[in-house]
Length: 255
Image 1 (cartoon, rainbow, N blue to C red):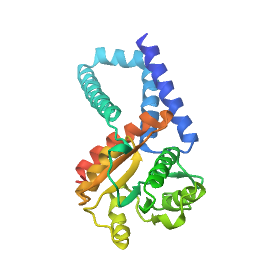
Image 2: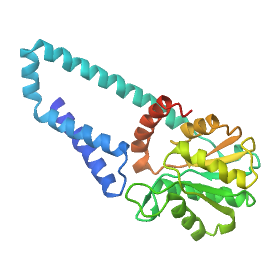
Image 3: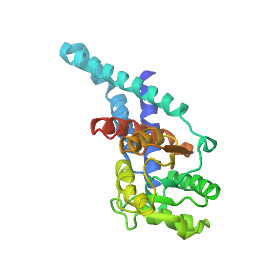
């Protein structure tokens, strides 16, 4: 029974990852479940041999049990992070009059914003209409194997949705959240906006806790998080990616 359950879990993880890869989602939050799924499938197939080896080799058994212990501890920490992500939210009504709106980049597919980025842009459009005098800064450079910068793709989307071109500014060099904020500073300075003035930051719900921490670390003293929803079919893979991004950001002292 356990063997069948492990096989089913492995197949589901692989199917989910392959489907998302076909949709153009190729980040670590998609690739890791694929690797785990393949591991579980192999584990289910070789389960009798592994059990026999554990009975014959005490050293192998101790190592095997230790590895599974590490895995369960990691999984518990991941589930705790998921609970934190689920409970984190910000509402538009909480923000005061703002001086600028920064939309964080998150990828593009075939010259179009990625599904999660579309949600960010739709949220930014609503906010821009409420604050028509606030410049809207879209961020993101040219990714691997991409032809256009994320900022230019986002700019085009906003123009299509009737945001005046005069309200939109591009930061088109960054390749990470940390650089989104770093390279937005000259744009803000050009507009006469100081880092101690209120600035709205638009991103998906899962991304905002880390993004706000990075902004504050870079001396943005009045940042207001505006949460865009994450499509359900992307949510848990995005949370998984963000889990490792949190660890990476801590190691690199990004916040």
